[in-house]
Length: 104
Image: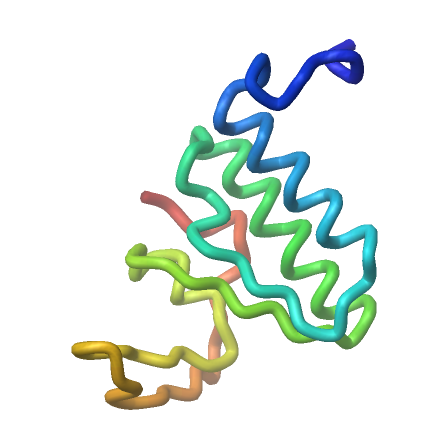
C-alpha cells in the first residue's frame, strides 16, 4: 500500500518500523535499537518489543535497547545504567517482564 512512497512521505512511525524491519532482515549478531518505540503508539510499540524479544530468543541474537523509559528496561535480562556518559552500574534482571505487560 505504501511501497511506492518515498521516506519523506511516510510518518515517523512508519519510517521507524521500516528501519527495524531492514535491520532484522540482515540477521545481525548484535542489534542496537535507539528508542525503538519513540514514535509509536502503545500497541504498535508492544508489537515492536515482541518482535525484538522474539528475534533475540529465536535466533540467539543480542538486542540492545537504548531507552530513557524505565518500563521498557524491565523486559531486559540485563540493564546497563549510564551517568555522565559512563557506565555507572549493571543489573541482572531475574524476572524480565514480557512486552505485553510493558506500559508507558
